Length: 276
Length: 284
Image (tube, rainbow over all chains, first blue to last red; front, side, top):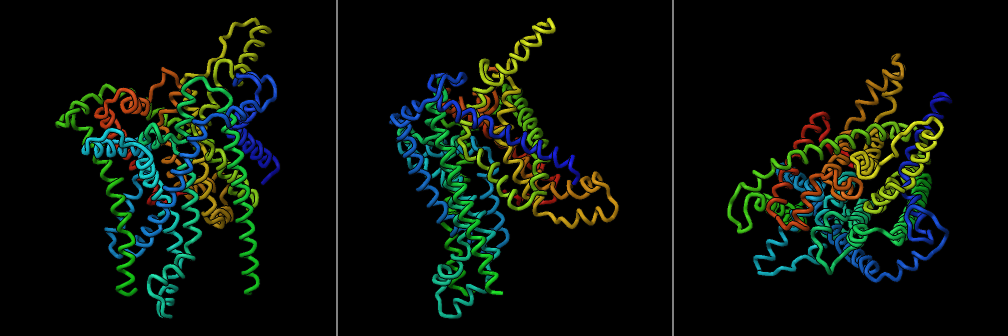
């Protein structure tokens, strides 16, 4: 590549990243504003952070988000991993492809349609039993599990395809029951897929607004729903403080996970080198 | 595989199959049921008949969604191309930098654009001082810039929120495609434009298709972006559906609108998939 084109590609990359990060920079800057304005910077202060930590409703919503995310991502990971091994093992092509089609529906369908379809189900079932307040933690966890499942399955399936099928057979020849063979041989081999599925499920759950908005009750507000109700009014910089903290948490998580995986790669390549 | 283990494998899928039927298929049937019944549960096509009133809204939503998707493609393609040509170290840093905003809450990301675009916001005041300067020096009387509550602002919001979903699939496909094909084309005497048109571009089509889907679907069905950045002038189909469920309490009309939206989107996706031979199995 000539010097000129590499300069223009650098400039282009810089422009896209400015576009991606300018709004985040604005949020972070104004979270430290001493005044109430979100457009005129009056001076540095941590006032809005203090305000945020005194806001019981926001802290409550954060707690709710964590409960829903942990519960739904664990259920989705266990059920999804079992489903992926089953789908992988099915010999019947039609069964396999129809399950995969259904699995794709929550990913292809607009979130608003997924949200209202589940809301209608919950309200309908509730009305059958003559109850009105069916929406709450239970429905939130069911809905989150449902939209996380496809991601778990699609993370685990490729790992199963990469695993040597003879390994499980060999374990069984050596006296393992099929059950033991699965837990001792197959499970460790597909673990990276399970972990990435779990992580994806967790982050999707924490971040979800649209589906939660339709299936949560008044007592089970998650953080995004709390943010939504706060942004309905004129926003004060405590929302910005909250987003700054979220941003920092994600940044730290990403850097750490990148370092860990880079470290793991190095270890792996060292191991590979030693074998030679 | 012996009988016992294959039985175990089959059984391990059953909880998911039951779950998928109960919480994926049955809810969609509920949407159809509510779409074709009235408040008492009697069959009616009144809700469907009302859809024609919202034809303009559907068209506007699809138009803005398409516009946002095309802009995303135009911005994302060169970036994905640049990324794929970088060294592995730089690539992983850039991927991380692109994913980071995606994990920020989408409501807050949209809200920050509101403060940038509003009438005394950062960008608007900067642009207006330029306008004032031109007016004062050249003796013109240009109108001050107005950005918030326009359709343009809604499209900016969509592009900003969903751009990473376009960059990542295209980048992934480019990374996987065989570099030696490009070299072969160059060896055969193709100039850079030829090579791009005949090799790089066709190879990246699956990435474009999956990026297109991932940007188009959420853009068409959004309601938060249009509420915050579009004001009262830009009502999208998502806004109308949301109103039926959250304030107007007309579940039947809302269900019929969602039903039509779902079918329209599946048609769009089917048309889009015809452009590629791939079965659409490209996910980040």
